Amino acid sequence: GQNIDQPTEMTATEGAIVQINCTYQTSGFNGLFWYQQHAGEAPTFLSYNVLDGLEEKGRFSSFLSRSKGYSYLLLKELQMKDSASYLCAVPGNTPLALVFGKGTRLSVIA
Amino acid sequence: DTEVTQTPKHLVMGMTNKKSLKCEQHMGHRAMYWYKQKAKKPPELMFVYSYEKLSINESVPSRFSPECPNSSLLNLHLHALQPEDSALYLCASSQDHLPGEQFFGPGTRLTVL
Image (cartoon, rainbow over all chains, first blue to last red; front, side):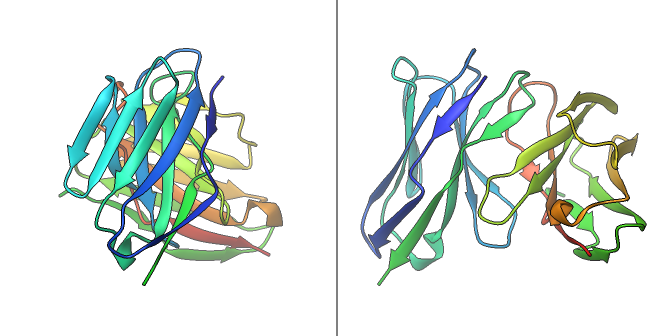
């Protein structure tokens, strides 16, 4: 089965950098996803990593280490609108079945 | 059109009612999903349709019945629900059978009285 662990809550200051970690255990590996979800809204896709290393996309970057079962999402130049839950997810027993971590609720303060 | 639409946005129903949730996408995606999400919890997968065939049923009670009339539409029929079934029901779609970005609809907020 799949087991995903990420911190429950984080707080960071506007303009700062924050790193949200995710550790996972899977029986097979088909990549790792990060989604953002604002309160009361649907999740939106941020990134998909299948190879080791850092992928940068504007203010957001995602890193993967398959040997360590570890990923992080890096958010730079934080803005108030970045306050949301960040969900780490991996494909489950079949590739289509995404299993989500419990999510990290990020609060950006002035 | 890069949108997944869901109707209704809100639904209140009694335990003896029968209702349906609807989901539509016109991105040519061949995989469609139903998720259930309780407050402050992550989405939990319920069903997956791939090429209009049910490919995954995550041990969901029979009071939830999915239907995929065509490649653009996905329904979730509800009957004899319990108050603990109150949740946000999210529909999503993705390209095909490989892992890939899932596009989520805005959800239906369901309350069972």
